[in-house]
Image (cartoon, rainbow, N blue to C red):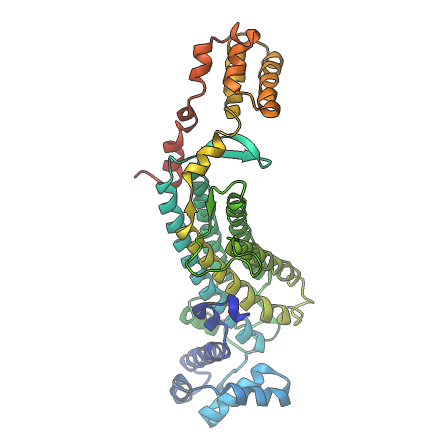
Length: 435
């Protein structure tokens, strides 16, 4: 985790104190379940809870023990024994390290998903507010980066809103899939631990028992989780790139908010650069990159190995912290985005009405021209506009081959901007529901 791209609430999920607290809760809940089943004394389970509940686990001490034992869970259990006393011999009965590590990781990933879902909710609120604000603000739609037909800026934002609604649904599904618990012992057979203990701990930790854990929770769950984060990051990047393009000097239809005192360049005082969305593009690349090692973690040897462990210690914190930061940044960009409707209109008018070419094409075919002839007639007049700066409507009205089929007054009616927006309400209702 890099502090520059971290927010405290998400980062705290991954700090050592939180991890050891979760480990303790898993062990203590397991002890309580064992006591209920008569495996260990009730007084021992109570003392484990009483001694550990309010204890401050000494991270430096655990690290010191680990340097000798070369095993993090054993180091923790040794330190816990220093806190609990003789009753610590009843801790970790029939369990393996993976029972603690995997269950803890899934608790952390579930908590991280909760924050990410809240992040998306904030982004959805900002997108909806700005989409409604610019529902009827006309702008040119582009395909291949080239002027195509008119849209509204609100539709651009509504598109993003619909995409992040899907992102939210995927995160909810990923949270559900990752929320499993394993306390099945060596090679997952429950030989030395009762399955009822796993059920008990899962319930206390807000998880579900893993049906078959083979000592480790299957990593296809984690692969799907991190792949979902990668897809969300890609949606984030798509919107960031849209804003970067709209901020180009030659376009300048929208731009990131530029605060008083902000500097755009160390060399050129006039610069107002899209630094936030450029940053988001870079962060999206990183979040996507973490999905590949997560998928490679699926194939472990036999019942388990630890080739996944080092990967997850890195990608768990980094992917969730980075995406959390990036989503919050994107929300800020949308919330404060400066929009220039006058520039949108200027760009819309830049090509002399060429964006109406399809409507003229369709009118000619409906008037009896073949599609090939209609396309040729429209294109030859469009190219005069494109290459010579002619007025498209004027050229069409002067072309006898065109006016033999479609009268000049009918052509003029085809250049009505409102024609393109007659179904905006329908699209908004699909995205946002009835107002």
